[in-house]
Image 1 (cartoon, one colour):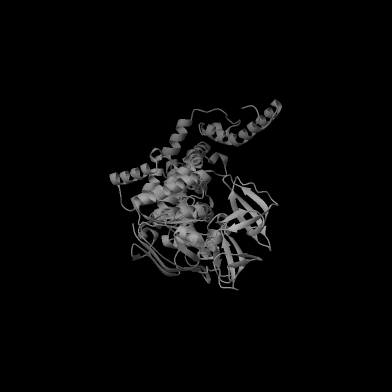
Image 2 (cartoon, rainbow over the protein chains, first blue to last red):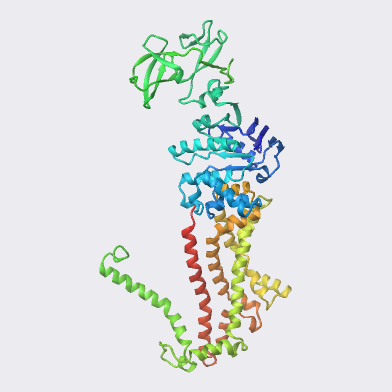
Amino acid sequence: MATVALRDVRKSYGTNAVIHGVSIEIADGEFIVIVGPSGCGKSTLLRMVAGLEPITSGTIEIGGRVVNDLEPRARDIAMVFQNYALYPHMSVFDNMAYGLRIGGIRGAELRARVEQTAAMLELTPYLDRKPRQLSGGQRQRVAMGRALVRGPAAFLLDEPLSNLDAKLRVGMRLRIKDLQRSVGTTALYVTHDQVEAMTLADRLIVMNGGVAEQIDTPMRIYLEPATTFVAGFIGSPAMNILPAQGTEQGVLLGAVPLALGRPAPGRDVLLGIRPEDLTVAPEGEGLPLTIRAVELLGADAYAHGEIAGGGEMVVRVPGKKALSPGARVGVLPAPGLAHFFDPATGRRLP
Amino acid sequence: MAEGMVGASRSGQWVAHFLLVIGVIVVAFPIYYVTIASTHPIQTILRPPLPLLPGDAGLANYAEAIGGGVGRIGGVGVGRLLWNTTLVAVSVAVGKIVISIASAYAIVFFRFPLRMVFFWLIFITLMLPVEVRILPTYKVMVDLRLIDTYAGLILPLIASATATLLFRQFFMTIPNELLEAARVDGAGPWRFFRDILLPLSATNIAALFVITFIYGWTQYLWPLLVTNSNSMNTIIIALRKMISFADADTPWNLVMVTCVFAILPPILVVVLMQRWFVKGLVETEK
């Protein structure tokens, strides 16, 4: 158990910079999720903390000790890989015991620690099996067990659930959170799945193009996204982001004045409204919208349409509300839940 | 059992079996004849027709070949020849495997300067058959005073680009995460090699052992050059030396016994390793 600190950590391959300076102080026992689209550098960042990838500049501290030049083993971390990377020729017991054996733990203590961890993960009946005799979910638990049994200062998890089917993934997600809480070990978790990110994280790092766009609690990120990228990435379906203009009363979207917040009059802004912050009204009220397609999910439906003056918009409506393509309705944004961004930088405007 | 195999019809099956039986006879008859002939006295072997059933001189022939030694090769017994050949074949096989697995490990898992240069240097030696470099190799052996020694018989045959390439190809299929998981678990290069890579290579090692053992066992040109004394001969060279141009001069009964002994160990290695090898194949899974 330990704190982890990243200070202006950078990585480049030759002249090609892939991580542009990430800094974060992680408290002891905190669950940090690094989320972003593929190629954003999230796995690289995790591998740098693990010591599998050298860092170009900056410092990484684990438990108050700078570990920049230490081998993975000396960093006292444990890692769960996306494809689990179990040793195929070793039994479940030996897979879990391997790190402990190297650490010089033998005999009764070794057996006790492995068996206790196996019991925690309900792996006891499988201890003598080889990985290939296990199902995907069981292999995933062995990979977790191999990390847990060592009792490391920090867990590093690289998309550990992405090879599981949807149902198993939900179960394991809850389990990982429970396990991490009960052992109280600091965890860094990489995923591209925003549901995993929102549900697991104490704090989220949203990455894009090697930059940490925002580091905050999941709810703060949802409520106050720092950039248009974060706004579009977190939340499903994505936030509607449309060009608008500030006026004395609010904003002008196309030709429709809306009383939402007050950017400086005359200023061009990007207006962001989440589909769930919009309600449908009869035609003539609010923003005119022509429905093009409706995705019915049961409880909810997402109505995709076009607003007067051009621009796409998605509205979340109750599933029972019958809307059909071609219908013309009005849309009312909930007051106070609009977001404004600078069109040039994409940053949030106060 | 009857349906679906080679011929769908009954006559088709007869034809197929007939061809297969012919094939077996062609391959097996010489071996059968050698075995039969090794149980006859030399007079019976020299006088036509060929005996096709075991004779009564078996015990005497084998006892003479093993215990008494063979006159034409300076009275060296078959036991000594077998020992020489086994030592050479096993050392060549083990040596080749050790050298090539080590060099493949270096080339695949370590980043060092001129890595690809070394890889190509090894690769290029594939283009040079042993015969092309036999004179310089012989000179080196003379200078090192290794003529008529086991080292001289074994060392020049050990380097193997083929086996190195084979291991390299196999190592490159090992997922990188496995190496990283071992690093996180605290395994250094030596431990990773011993605990992970070696067990995973077991099937490859078994296959290579079979191939290189037989390669070492059947070597002809190099052992012929590098040994002068009869007691350092391998069984293949001794066989050649036993046979004279004049039929009457050749102890055919003992030649046949030596032949049987020359064939048996490779067969044993293939049969024994094959079982293990198949087991390895069945158990491996990515």
